[in-house]
Length: 175
Image: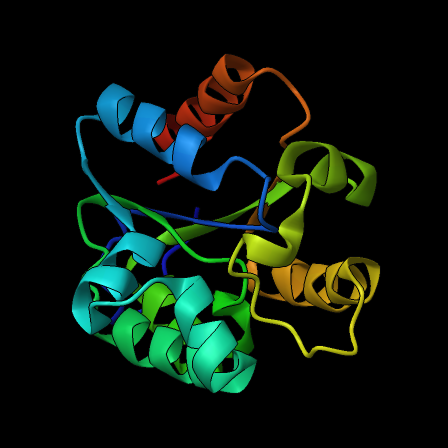
């Protein structure tokens, strides 16, 4: 991968994608394989605010959760890490630009049918979406953002080990 002038080399990976894409599962295995620290931004958010994502959604709404997420993401140092983001991270241009500056952003792509199969009842999953949006509406909207922010798209319907192998091959060859 070519680095832009005056940009530090990126030694990190940030995973983006819908709930159920496997960001946390792949991220943990990837961090072990690449000997990097693992950051699950959903857990960082919860630890920072002392509440669950679903509690924020229920009490304060999806826009508040997105604002909290953006604020926390801008403070994360992705260098030397594998970062698993929440599905709505891509709504914050500032947060994504920050993560992209220090890491290779990879979109773990799965079709809507697979998201539904993996997530099941998404109403308690902490998905930051307008109440009038269906999961399909949110999927369509976010897919465009994932594609816009990612440098690489990986088919995450493959077995987890194959996804990790593919990212490792990419990382070792291009970063």
